[in-house]
Length: 102
Image (tube, rainbow, N blue to C red; front, side):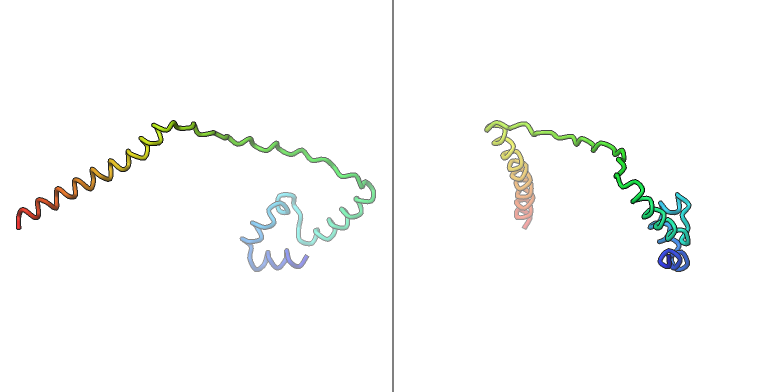
């Protein structure tokens, strides 16, 4: 096929990445047409589809979060507010010291 031949000549890296299965199986660009003819001739001879074994899909881990009580939710909200207030309080103390110096 012309596409395979031109990609080998022009962009060998791209050919390596796109046609890795062809390379593994030893299929050359000239043999692709023959391969298609052979495959299409084999279909009428045995038209039943062949079952392929597939890996079972992985089971994903799923965790449900524990429900928090009202008190736990309230404490969770108060905690960052206390941290902000303490940080703001520390900043205010620094500002007060500067005012005394002036």
